[in-house]
Length: 127
Image (cartoon, rainbow, N blue to C red; front, side, top):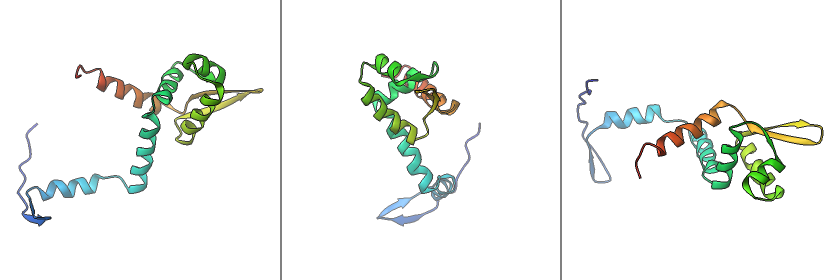
């Protein structure tokens, strides 16, 4: 792929010469709205907690109840419920009731994709 030649746009901002104003303009045009950016940051923040991330990993194989997740992670059911509430608020997990038991699963395939892409990235061999 041939690299595009850009005509430098000279401008001053904070005493620094800006050489690629077209790139800055393109970045502005492609940027997500602030509300979307904030929501995405919240999703990544939720996934940034090791316990919640392990819960998501556990749910990749299928739905689990709170007791199953507690046994899997070695935590109390109360601690699991608290973390599930945070994941549910971010639309990362959903629940299904069967009698008195609530089963949790990944909200959709995008959640598994987020995890898969992240794992692929860290497994590329860089340390």
